[in-house]
Figure 1 (tube, rainbow, N blue to C red):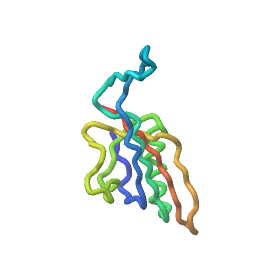
Figure 2 (tube, rainbow, N blue to C red):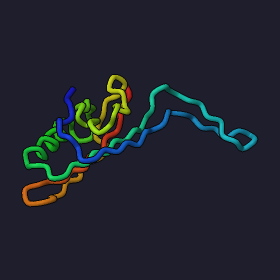
Figure 3 (cartoon, rainbow, N blue to C red):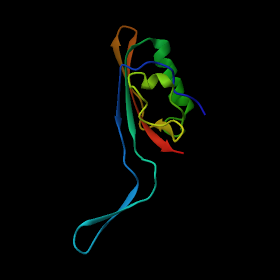
Figure 4 (cartoon, one colour):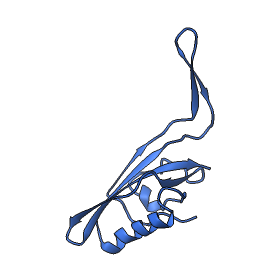
Length: 123
């Protein structure tokens, strides 16, 4: 299992996800919900980088390719959560995979901006 590159992001945001559940409509018209597991799913982490050097940008591209794009799961390096007082997602319960292909832009001469979206995989 590989680890996401150790580059401090400019910004991170997390959609906290929800617990898997079945929702049925009762005869009265109200919803009845059945929780199916104890681990949240569909937690989405957005990581934004700006002004990366070519070698830093290449490390993210290489990692994306090594994971076969959005297929294989991986660990996050601790630096991703550096702006959070406590990591909001427990690394012992979840791995991550790319949710979609990388968004790459040239932000200055020989500098790159990259946006990454990851989704949790419960263990």
